[in-house]
Length: 119
Image 1 (cartoon, rainbow, N blue to C red):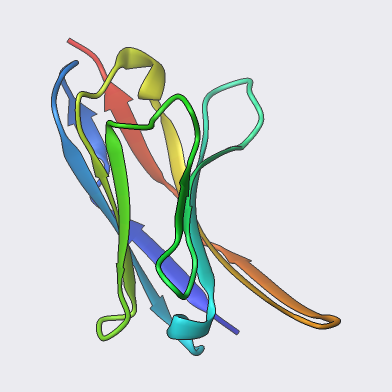
Image 2: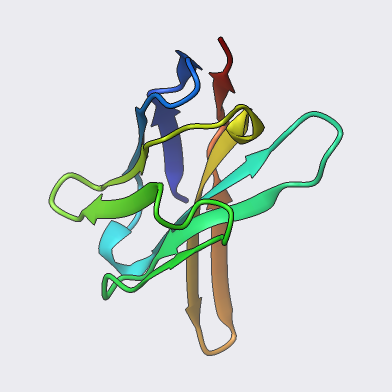
C-alpha cells in the first residue's frame, strides 16, 4: 500500500509560479510511474503530466512549456513546477502512483491540493 501526500497548493496571481510536491511512503517509489492530474469544479479529472521510473516525461498540451514534472527517488518525492500560471489552471491537483508488470497493477491517489489562479 502506497500513501501519497501532496503539498504546495495555494492562491497565486496569473503569471505566477507554484511548486507542488508529493511525498510517497509504503512502497518502492522508484518502480512507479508518477503523475499529476487535476480536476476543476464540474469537470472530469484530467492528466497534467507523468514521469516514468526511467525519467521519461509526458505532458498535456495545455501545460507544455509551462509545467515541469520531476522526481527524486532518494526522497520518494515527485514535483510539479508550474510557471506562467493561468486562471484556467485552477483545480484540485492530485498525485498518482502507477505500477504495472504483467497482470499486476497497483494504482494509488493522493488526497489532492487546491491551486487557485486569480487576481
